Length: 175
Image (cartoon, rainbow, N blue to C red):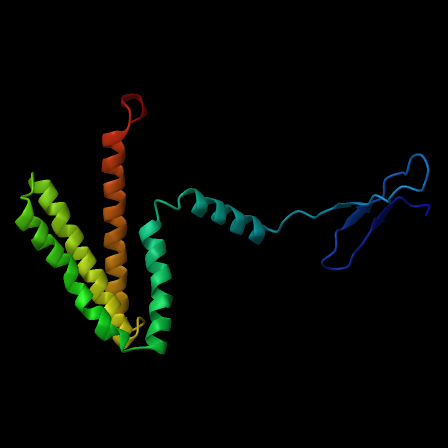
C-alpha cells in the first residue's frame, strides 16, 4: 500500500481513513484510526435539547408526568374502559382528605388553607380527568382541554412551590 490516506464517498462510512505507519516488527496487531464526520445540525439540535431537558428535569416533572399519563390512559381505555368505574370514586378522595385534615387540626394561616384547598382542587380535577378519560378516551376535545388546563395549573403550582421552598431554605448568600 503506497497511499496512507484513503477517502471514501460511500454513504454511512467515515469520509477519511488514516492508516498510521507500523513501527518495529510487523507481527503486532494492525491499528486503524477512523476519523468520524461531524454531527449534522439535526443531531446537534437533538443533543442540545436532550441536555437541556435532562438539566431541567425536576422543573418540568408535572408536565412530564402528564405527557406520560396521556398515552397510558389511552391504552388502558382501549383495553378496559370499565376501569373508569373503579377509578371514579378516587376523584372524591382529595376532598375527603381535605375535610379530614380540617377536622383534625385547624390550619395555622390563610396561606396554608389556600395551598391545601388549591392542591385538593387540582388533585380532584386530575383524578376526575383520569376517570373520564378512561371512560370516553383521553383524546376527546373537552377532555384534552381539561388535561391542558390541569397540566398548566400543576406546572405553575409546582414552579411557585419550588421557588418559595428554595428561597426559604437557601442560605443567606445564595439567594
